[in-house]
Image (cartoon, helix red, strand yellow):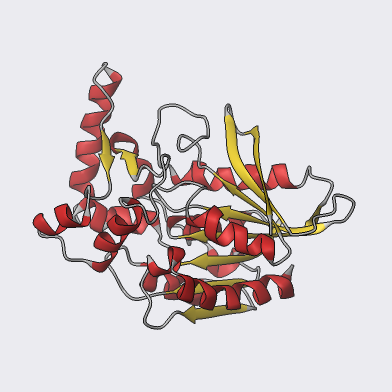
Length: 308
């Protein structure tokens, strides 16, 4: 069994909280390849990035660091619930900064994995941080593209105007407007007329005992979401993303992971790149369902063992 340690380390002006997963029969006198695991938007380290993929990668022999994003979970930073892509990518860099200080981590064998929004953040980080030697994006979602489309009701200019007005109001002392990305339950979503597989299955995962965690708030600070509108997780991938890349896809849904997966697979300059579509399984099946997770790990573990 892997061993779990709770750790903190310094970020820009606050502390990051993370779970460090160590392999079975861990020997501090040896050196190990390490992987940074990045959670989805609105999630936390105790959910899929840590308890599922972090734990299983550790059991396969890797040191894994699953962290909470800045302004979210147990990590510091104010105001709370900021989802700023630039800072989320910076979080991955600080996670690597921490890993390279550990005497049992081989600094030349560091990989990165992310789920949903965390998958696209991982891609963006690897484009400019070559300490990442190989990366995996699981149902990766380009948050900038999602904000310009579904999360703004396909009216990004209108959304930006509303965000600007809200931020001005908050600067003058009004309470922060925190939105919930999901309905309170699957039933509530259906009653509101929602039918999309991603929205309803996300709600089933995050809002029930299946995946619910105290810090998995599925919340975002509305006025600060403007930072994502002009952001592209895959910018310059055609020239700068050169590391080995594994993309894991799923059924098409409103959050767009299937299409984003094929896009980065096509755009990446990586000479070694793989696309694995988990046929018949959906975005949120890949968060924790044993069979699709096992299919995914059968790709992920050999990929990292080959390239780290």
